[in-house]
Length: 118
View (cartoon, one colour):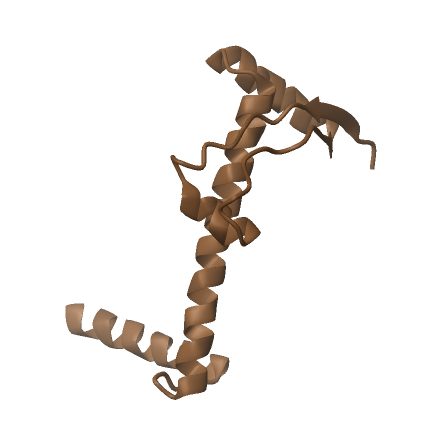
């Protein structure tokens, strides 16, 4: 795969605006700055990034920073949800079901609803 290096200068993180993001993603709320980072993107991704930057009037590094922040926040939320589900199963609050059984039950319910509507 051919990749193009894109150098980004990451600005100071606004910990007052979203302190929980830092804590959940990095395990600390004391992180206040990030270093320069080089990322490698496919040429078509660089092209799309440059096109979006031109359309929006925003710098490519701002767009990448926003995308990464949103990704990390979503990842932290998914991790929190999965940890909660795991805790529910381990504590016995939730009973796990076999995947095939679960899909079969969903198919039955769907078929019952279709039959009632007819």
